[in-house]
Length: 309
Image 1 (cartoon, helix red, strand yellow):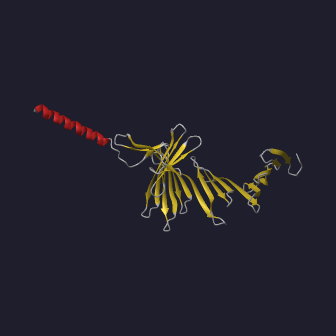
Image 2 (cartoon, one colour):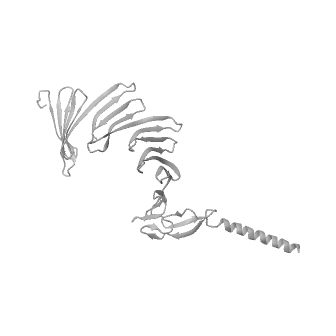
Image 3 (cartoon, helix red, strand yellow):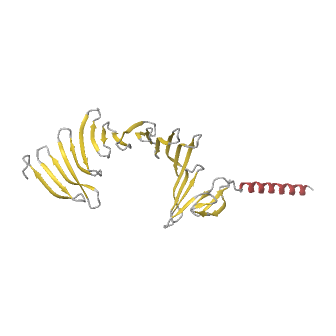
């Protein structure tokens, strides 16, 4: 009698253990895992379940919703999206099936469903965060962008109300911050905004100020020393044709014309410097003629009276 009870008890334990083991092997569903060929779920023991080949229609799997792009060389990219249509994951594989890129995106949304913050991870390491400002009309504008480095430092980009980067800040692993650059913008004749001034700060305390015209060409370059005193000041001027091609430009230090340039169009219609005139402090003038490849084809020097030397 005791033997029967013991046998029954052992049988119950075995069945219970089998049931527990079976439960732990059950597919837990949720997120699909995938590579370029298959998709699957992972159970509580980390084993693959429901492994199946992608069923692609227009490159999109009808089961796991992955967009699978396989290229002629055998490599592949796999994209996944959130319910809002934003990227949630990108993985890339080489022709041998080795994982070469693993990018994941996370988002925060406002009550209207607009993205207010995005985070980008590379192989599960945070590399970038972007914060957005959403207008009443639903227009999204970047307000802040942060790049993270492996050493714990980060670079911060602050933006204006139009999404233009206005300040670049470096933050070391201990939280010490240093402004690297500032940017200012103006509205051009076509209504578009362009960078009108850049300020670049160096570690030794010196800094540069660059002013630009609508075409993006530099107008003035100031250099200041570590005490804030003006160290150099260079001016530039330009002439353009009706198509916007540069015809002539000059360079001076504010009191002395140092260089003049003339431009021509090459066989492809691109502008290149065909003539450079250099004015020296010893009152000599040297002219350099260039071909389309930037090679000097003629060089002539004149004295202060205009006589060829």
